[in-house]
Length: 279
Image (cartoon, rainbow, N blue to C red; front, side, top):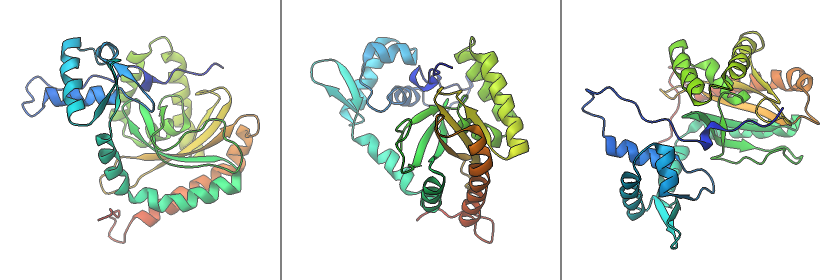
């Protein structure tokens, strides 16, 4: 099966709001949409950003000029193109440093990666993607090198499907409608895979993606509920299909993954039921 296009590489979904919402700052939303277009190593010009954000080029030019002045973008020489600036580091690093779930999960993730020789990753949802917030590699060479900050699609990956299994039905329906609109041609097959994964989660405790995201990668995942008002996350285990079969993942890795997630959730929860949040 050919590798699927990551929806994150296309335009981010436009921010939607009721017309009467007086507290919605359109200019701010548009600036954040511009920043959301950039991925690891992205270099984009105003014309590309205008297409992705579905905004007039003149509007995008003003936004990029402002973001550049504030340090959120850096203009590359005289090319007229931009990449993310160092000011964006403060946003991501401040959030990551406060996530107890990363600190709690990492030792167990490292242990699982070493024991089962799999890649273990913790991710949270951002738009139509899951973004890695922690990653542990097995001693063996990985099929795909994905570090913290990497993005993978929700709809075709085990990690994304685990997140889908953890949210409520109304939120899931709204999200899947966005996926359908983004790629109507692929939707029937995508929908079948998601429905199968939701059934797997109910019966097996994990979601699966065997060659559906990339043909040479197999993976399973389990939802994590960090509490304290944070949205559900997911931990995935996977690797090259050539040495990591679905049977091995389900028979050997699955029980360890489920047990690990239970330990993480227990460790994050105090006796009064509230999750810890770093000071």
